[in-house]
Each structure stands twice: as C-alpha cells, then as structure tokens.
Image 1 (cartoon, rainbow, N blue to C red):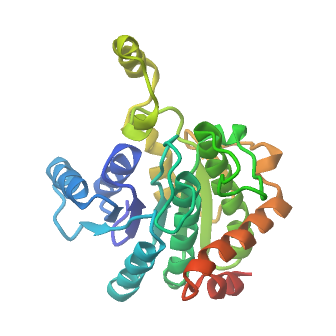
Image 2 (cartoon, rainbow, N blue to C red):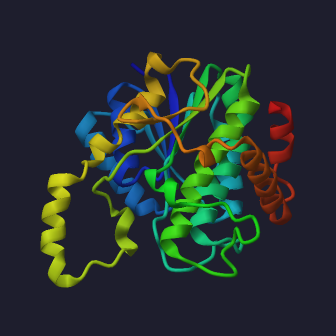
Length: 299
C-alpha cells in the first residue's frame, strides 16, 4: 500500500501514465498528474476519481510542458513550495515518431521531451526526493532503444532526421541517464530504475501513418496482440511501490522482472558524457537551473 506517499507521474492524462496514476491511487497513494494539456488531464482525473473513489486531495492535476524548460522550472518551483515530501517520481511522458519539430527552446522534439525535459525535471526535484528518502525515481524507456545510437555530433538532428531513429535514440538516452544517475545516487537513499513496458495500445503512435484500408485489421490485431494500458502500467506501479525493489539501483525491468540490457545502454563512459552535454544544453538556455549544483551534490 502507498498510504502517505506522494507520487508525480508525467503524462498521466492518457495511456500508461493514466493507468499508472489510477493504479497508485488504488493503492491509497497520492498522485500529482503532471500534464501538458490541462483540459484532458482534468477529464482523466475526473474519470479516475469516479473509478477509484479518490477525492481531489488524493489526485491533483498540475501543468507541465516538457517541451518548455521554463514550464519545467515553474512546475518544480511550485512543487518545492507546496509539497513537504516526494516519495516517487515517474518519468513517463513521451513523444513517439513525430515529424521534425523543435521544442520551445530549440531542441529536436523527441530528444527534448523524452530526455532533456525529464533530465531537468529530475535534477530540480532531487533535493526534495533526498529529503523524503527512502524515495524512488522510475524512468519509462522502450525496447526500441536497441535501434538507437548516441551521435554526439548531431544530438539535435540538425544534419539529418529519421523519426524512428530519433525516438530510439531518446529511449537509449533514458537508459544511459538511469545508469549515470544511479551511480551518482549511491548512498543517498534515492533509487532510480528504468522499465520497458512493451507494445501497449495507447495514443503514443498517433504520428504513425496506417493506411485507411489497413486500419480495421490493424485495430483488430492490436486488441489481440498489444497490451492494455493497465497491463503496460504494471511494471511502473511495481517499481513505484514494491518492497521487492527496495534498495535496487540502476536496473531495467520488463513485466516486473529485471532485464539484461545491451552494452550500449550501460556504457558508463557514454552515459557520463551524455550527462555532461545534457547539463550544458539546458544551462545554456536556463542558467538559473540548479542542475549542476544538484549533480555535484550527488557525485
């Protein structure tokens, strides 16, 4: 049970995020739904409250646009002012194979939202997580990380852009971030672990084109072969609350079991370099970020 625990779930208005929020509320946890679209988030919150019997204090909606570093700063400032503790941060939100666009700060959208936005969010909330220790960070990645590569010469896809490769790269970045953060958090009382949820029926693939004539067959197959959002959220809920993972650090799970990752997802040298470059990228635009201060304190 999660009585007395406060959990932030990014992208909690739909799909795995919504199912994760509902699952934690059912375990009596208090959830802060961190979402870009407030109207959709409020609607999802009303539905979850109806399904679970939760009240407005147990399920809170706050605006967070991970495509805007300013929004991340505002969200974190509010959390630090309003919340006495934070027990679990679930970095769930993501963009999948969108056309080439840039975030408010000029980053390629998938890398900016899936990696950099969560990178900054986690940094800014680290002190609160430490004060609330033992606490947890959960990072949602994807098995598609296997197709990704970290090209330090073109992290922003200025030279070329392939939407599938860009997504895989951002998911590989999630795992490398988990690897390096785990190293820095040793002995802090805060753990970080990642997960790959599998193929889930969500709106994440809204940018993927399916021919009109093939849609009925695709929808039929997806119902039979893909996981439901509730099934996809099981590992997120498990990592957020299970005593089985007390003290477990820097691992990746699927179906609530630890997985063996490809070497490129645990390369400490690459992970450290990506960390340093990510810090530089966010500080160039928002030098008031406390990222470097937090990262030094975790080293």
